[in-house]
Image (cartoon, rainbow, N blue to C red; front, side, top):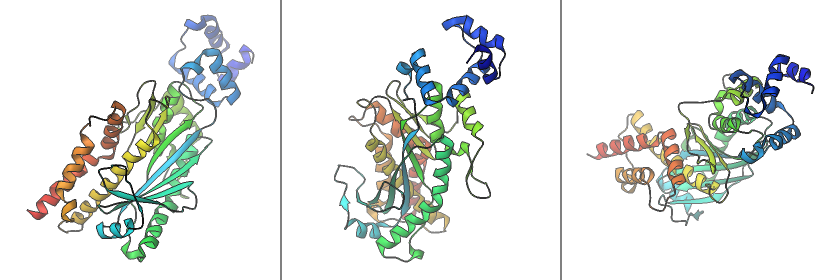
Length: 357
């Protein structure tokens, strides 16, 4: 574009663009001008972004691979089935056998839309479905809308699948209450601060969706996402656990987002999944105790899963281990903080102790 055409495209004056050009590499545009340029870059073609990265040197500094969005979605659907039903299910499943302190077994199950789906059943009575669904959405908003809309089918599917596996009628199989999402970002078209913002939005997708729309969850205007990517996005309940030069990572109440910049030094998807499976199983277990209390019952569990079990679980999840890396500690602390599990473990522990006292 000519200087005049470029100014018109951006919606600024010719003089403003002349000042940028005349100032050279040492010139720093005002904040509002930077936002305009960031938006223009976000809207540019993949080829234009690649040329820009090569010309500016951003390709060496930016942690992303310019191009389309690539995300592996990992959904976790937990529900409590009870210790005895869990024992019956586990008798037909493969024990974890990897030294995990929370005893569990797993099996692959069919899901109509997931590339892979596993059912993990824990000896304490919790069951967690793990769905793996790769996506290449046009925008983060598209991914967020898909996430919320898919709940409508995923939640009843989980209940029906367990009903069939347990050979039980609907009345005796509980409904899963929620879905926790873990996003493993494989590629994205952003650079610099926009890349960091994209991970924050992945961990808090509700800000891109109108969940109360008459026809179900609907996308907010595309300018909302563009505005966040240009100006940045922060949320008090989002916790970072990334390591500079190694990863960008955020945990929120409804999701976790992770992008690895160093395969050798970053966390693996298996490590993230293992942490979430443990947290979701125990969150589900403590939720069952809370439900008993709210139903006017004295909460009770088999002795091996009583308050001492919860005390040990809390210690394992909140105390750093000698073999853990700093990244593992940061991951666990971020997920524990945003899930609120530590407080739930203490409350459930107290409730079980009082019920037998």
